[in-house]
Length: 296
Ligand SMILES: [Zn+2]
Image (cartoon, rainbow, N blue to C red; front, top):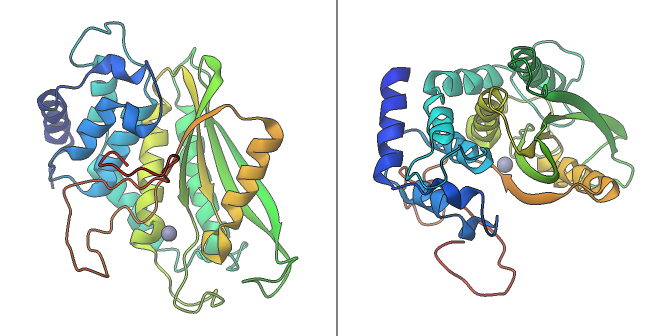
């Protein structure tokens, strides 16, 4: 495993090699295909674990560019990326796996197992980083949100209020928001089994770890656009936590510029084709116009 300093040095070198154009982050379309930096980062060959690289990609996407828009590299972005800590990402995944299951219908009261313990863990981590945010920077706000499931049957055997988490990192411009997501809940083959061991290291511990590391680092950095990190539940039962947030966003008129959902980002092997790729972050998006391209 690389030391943090070596990792930081290597990340910076890789960014320089990719000839990052920092001003691209502040101009033009915020769709993924309109961001040369993001595409450069995604196409880079890397030896880093995918969740680490993905955290770097999210940071680059969210950072406010520095003072010198003509520079081929941006110190704000480079500094942010250099803080991604591989050991931290691994620890988050280990901690989440240790909770036995995070199934949406699992215990909300057991301090060591289940969805309640998982939400508390995420809340503790993000709350700690909010406290450590530098003076003069708006403090990140962590909110535990409940929604009700099971009223219409589906993959539920009872009506229950379930928790999820929203961490808001306020930007100086209130008219733009970026949404980053990962899902908390896990499952075994039987989607109604809420007690069996369902570690979910990849699905979606990898996404949660990436999001946690992103929150940690963004808590230290001034932002222009507001970044909302959504840790959703109910995904395996039918995307219910995401649906609840979508309704909230519509109701409250969130000025969303982009949504990046991180699911199973540690998976490097395609089950259907057995193709193995552990050097790239894969991005999937719906085409608006029906055309296809490498940038999707
Ligand atoms: Zn998933």
